[in-house]
Length: 184
View 1 (cartoon, rainbow, N blue to C red):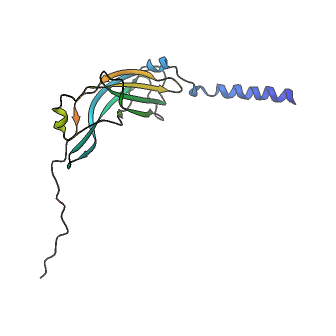
View 2 (view 1 turned 135 degrees about the horizontal axis):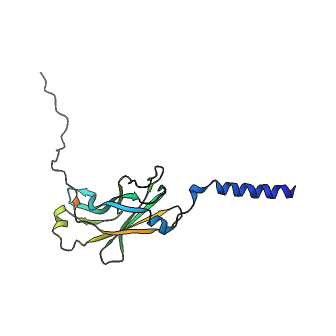
View 3 (view 1 turned 90 degrees about the vertical axis):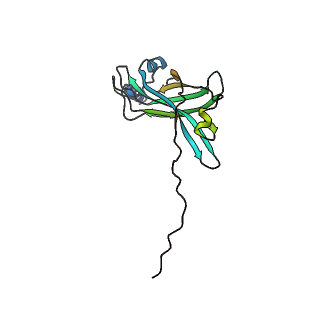
């Protein structure tokens, strides 16, 4: 009985390994050589705003698309962005996104837009308080990718534009009570 069970068990294990080619781990260099980052845009957006007392918190973001330059579909790719003030080692903020999942990016094709937002930013009172501030430092973002057990691969480092994509409400709607009905 033992002579039959061990070869049957061994055959079952080997068969299952042959049926799992889609689960192979990707080497870091293989991942890096499969991805071209295109259509990169960086800017600052509002995380928190209040008109009175004035408070505006801006966070840096990076948006991009991924072009698959390999011969295999890209699936299960995670992205990580680390935002830092230029010349500083301390992190301003970071963002992680499991972006490419069920819908693979086929060879030669480009992904949908992927956006990573810093979880922390800088605080001021108005847009002008940022634009006119000589101490508003330049921020850089390092973009990494990871897939199927690979280590993180550095895809690039980008300077965050000082473009602010925020417009406070122009109109203030006064709070009023219900209109009183006139009696006849």
